[in-house]
Length: 305
Image (tube, rainbow, N blue to C red; front, side):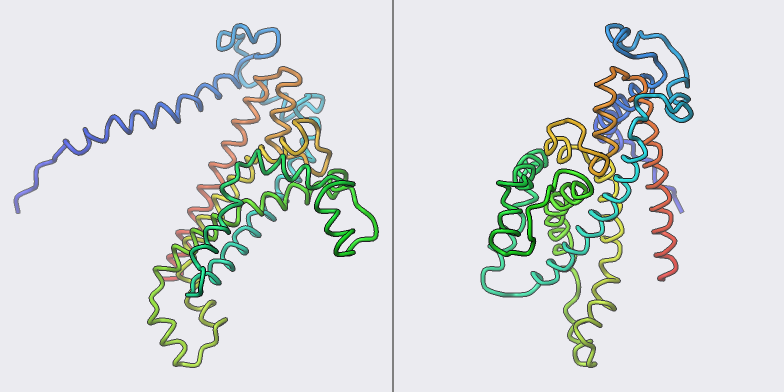
């Protein structure tokens, strides 16, 4: 059989786009890596990339020296980021999936309902942080007014932006903004589920819950796993809502996340080299997480087959 000649023309057409994507993505990464190897602080900032080269010293100070200003509050930020990521990601997936299942049926005003439910996702995250910051105010915030003055669910108005309550003050707005896009993605995936499978299951006497568990969930499994991974990544790097809600200042030990802490400490102490080192460590850990997650996902699909 005659071998088909290699046609390089399609690859040449793709080459400019590939080079542009590499430049856009690799340039900041490589620059950040190089910055993490420099003594870049308030005294050498005017030199920027010509600052003194100190190798892995920034990494050593962050990982092994407890007196580094970047490490102040790092334990609280890691704890909060892990809890925040788990709670927000799982809640957004569950709420989005539940609402998508409810909307995946015919009823009057379905299109209007879908459009209205997408409104929280349309609002920019920094606006969400600002608005909810006002809503959480103790005396005049709408949350306390509704809970205490109208519904009488609480005896007194709590401080939502202080103490352990501040954790939920950042979690709830993030969930509120995140679940609509999950709903949209799940709704699009549900459109591809064959109706004859549900009809056959109904004829066999399978309950609605059984149909959801044995038909809907297995078909949506790839979407759920991928979106859960994206949610983990987005929430680990969450910044806008916390920063805007607390005005860029210290939000307390229960509301501080890794990215706000990194930004605040790096700019407060002008320790940009160490800040770049922490950023690169975070990026490396997230790359490892994505690799392990995708490998586990492929293995689970092979087992399903």
